[in-house]
Amino acid sequence: MSTAPLPASRHLPHSDLLELRRWNTPTIYNGWERITAHPIATTGFNREPLTDFMPEMGAMVGYAATVVIEPSNPAHGAANPGAWSAYRRYIASLSGPTIVVVQDLDRPHAVGAFWGEVNSGIHRALGCVGTIIDGAIRDLDDMKAVGFKALARSLAVGHAHSTPVRWGCPVEVFGRTVQPDQLIHADKHGFLAIPREDEPRLLAAARYLDALECQTVIPATREAPGQTRAQLLAAIDAACVRYGAEAASTFKPGGEWGRDAQPAATRTPPAG
Image (tube, rainbow, N blue to C red; front, side, top):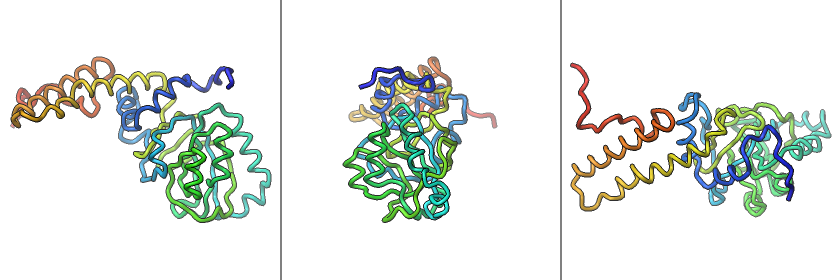
């Protein structure tokens, strides 16, 4: 195992990435929305449906390697017969863990698969943990056996004229632009592409807010037996207020349970 330091472009130590992987992607989003200056409803995550074909593998975390393909077009392979070899050297130059993010120009109707048993095995050997592909995969069971996770649009039988067209460039996948080397967290819910400036505080925010939920809003609902509806509603209101106040004091106002500034019974009704 190499002990060489990660490149300067890798902002987080491997231990942080391992800890981020312990949570699902919605939990990471909860942390991210509290620290980011970006619009939380229109940036970061996929805007179109996709399928996690290996949900049993849990979340994957890594830095984006990007590539564009167009399996319907045989001209790409003819024009650049050395594309596969050059592309593999690009992948090999990156420090893992790497998630390969693939823009398929044939979308939404995939013609051929970029991924199968062999290509997944090659990428796994080069430090890649999985892919997000706005196109098709095949050899599903074999990909699982390799340990290469895939979030994709569909399955396919053949590879057609699948070859790398360009790589190391911004790509458009599932309604989201992903930059090369961008930190990605993905699971069966979708993916979150973290803006570079948000990386340093992400783990602390996710860790803190997950613990805060366990101390406030979650027990308020789990302790319902034996309470009247009025008691239960009062407990939930109080838990939401506590969650919102503590989260806002550490990060910023907002978030899923941070909108209540005071219990419903004490709020001033709107004028009129």
